[in-house]
Amino acid sequence: MTIFLIWIHLLAAISWIGGMIFLSLVLAPLVRSQNAAPEFMALFRSAALRFRLVVWSAAAVLLATGPMLLHQRGLHILDLSQWPRVLRIKIGLVVVLLVLTVTHDLLLGPQIRKISAIPDSARTSWEQVLAQSSAWVPRLALILALGVLFSAVILARS
Image 1 (cartoon, rainbow, N blue to C red):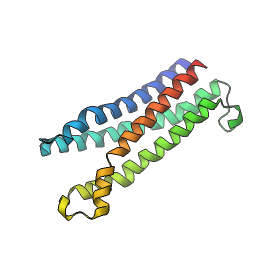
Image 2: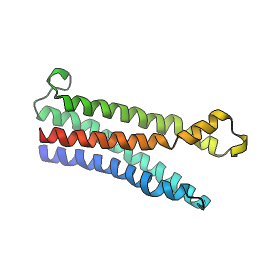
Image 3: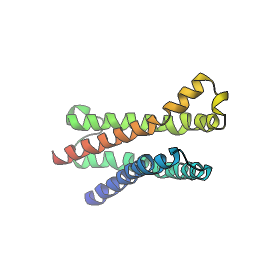
C-alpha cells in the first residue's frame, strides 16, 4: 500500500510540475513572441484552462495522500513538534503554492481576461501594472513547486 501511495503522490506532483514547466517555458514564450497570431493566444488560454483541471486534481491527490504517507512514517498530522524541519518547510511551501494558485485561478485570471480585451491605450495604470505583473505569478508558483520537490527529495533521503 505504501508503494502505491508514493506512486500516486509522485504522479500527481509530476503532472502538476511538468505542466507548469511546459506552460511556462514552452507555450508562454511562443504566445509572447512578437509575431504570435491570435490563434496562439486562444491555444494558450485553452491549454491553461484545461491544465487547471489537472492542477486541482493533482492538488486533491497530494492533499489526500500526503497525510497518509506521514502517518505511515509514524508522524501525526496534528503534532508538528514531531515533524522534521524539512517537512515543516515543505508544508509551508505547499501552503504558499496553494494560496498563489487559488489567487491566480480565481482572482487574477478573470481580471486578466477582462483587461486583455481592453486596448493598451485605454487601460488604467492599475490595469497596466496588473497585466504586466501577472506573468510573474505562474513563474513564482513554478519556483515554489520546485522548492517543494527539492524539500521532498531531502525528506525522502532522511
